[in-house]
Image 1 (cartoon, rainbow, N blue to C red):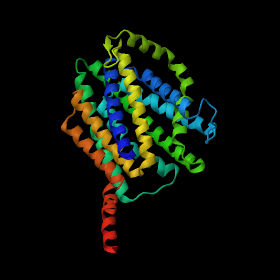
Image 2: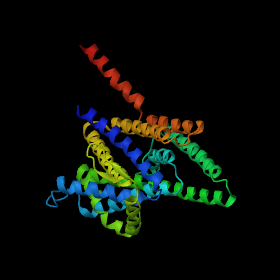
Image 3: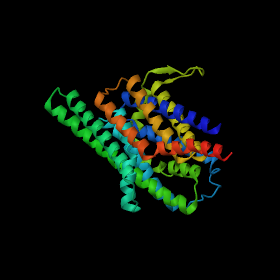
Image 4: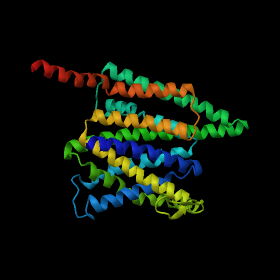
Length: 331
């Protein structure tokens, strides 16, 4: 029952989170810092109350290791959200972040000296081709949409290239953080809830450097039209409502993934998260009418098929199906 509940949380939380994020970004494209700060603050306060008991519970993993992990996590979160301010459309943002397998494999080979099968390399090649197709077609859209003047088109394309660079950097940094986290868990054991708290609480002072931008967007949010919250009946600026719902759904999403990792195999988690990304992409395209050509669909198909190939889902499903037959023969 708990796995089904966790799957429900992941789909409800993560998919609705994408909707509220896009509502925020469409109105104020540069609001990534205030969104990141609100998410970090909410999860840090929740962890302070229910995980570390106001600091009375000692961490199982030394703080000095969390300091390294937090630096990477904070950088990845800020850069990913800021990329939306650099002419990066939400569908491309989601597809590009699905390329984490590529970054994990590259760093795994370089740092951990891992070796993979030909099948794994083929799956990664498929993901790479898919991301390249989507990125190339998005580049053509950026230049064509900004064809009012040659100068404007070049400027828009330059910002888009910076956005792609930011997403690439965040992808590699996230993969490096995953390897570091893996080595920590091998040494000290898995402490996911504790890591979740420290990853969000320790970076909070870093937002001082982004304080002016956060304050400016808070002022813009205050000026947005009033919206009466259903059921509660309280009126509040609609941008603050979107931010509140984004933070809540982000927490629901993270909690769902956490329950899933404790109740299911890593294969199941990968499948659920991959399917969730695809559903989020469909919602973004249909609900917000984001431009998405046949080439984008082809690239997306390559990315998701490559991801499923990498997890060897068909082999694993074959093993699961064959087990009852073996048991029947024994009986």
